[in-house]
Picture 1: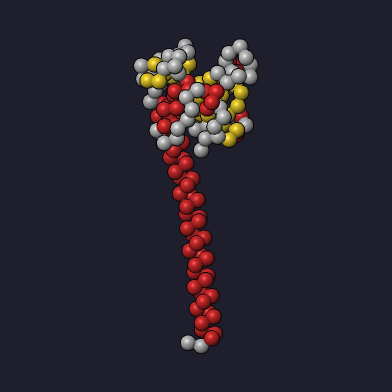
Picture 2: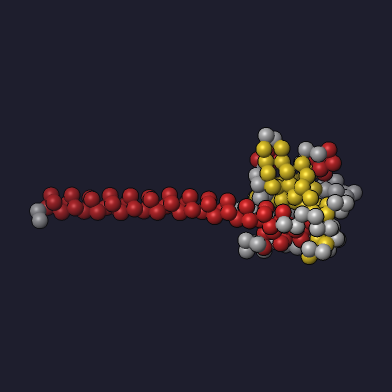
Length: 164
């Protein structure tokens, strides 16, 4: 093999290696997005299985559950351990503006006397045409879905966080 052939062969090998590395990188990126989407769907679907469960302060079972336990169990379904209280949960993940909320994000509210203290939480189940739906354990209705644009919830809303 002459020198010119060796250079061409080395170049071909190098070029093939670069293409292979690039294709692995791109496929792992799309694979990661697919896993993220599956995890979000699993979290939301798990939360929805609790629909109709009555609210119970400090409750953690299907006979009675509070808002933070709903989040705790929903994220545990994909192996994510969340803190047990909504106040501690409000420190997990990346803050997200209201207009950028997505399915699977956790939303936090101040429903008590202190206007800026986290006292309630839910999981975004759907966002369409400026409407944000979230599932939570309501003291009056148990586990239910509500719209963030609802007068009560829009006034109590503090912020959202993205765990995934």
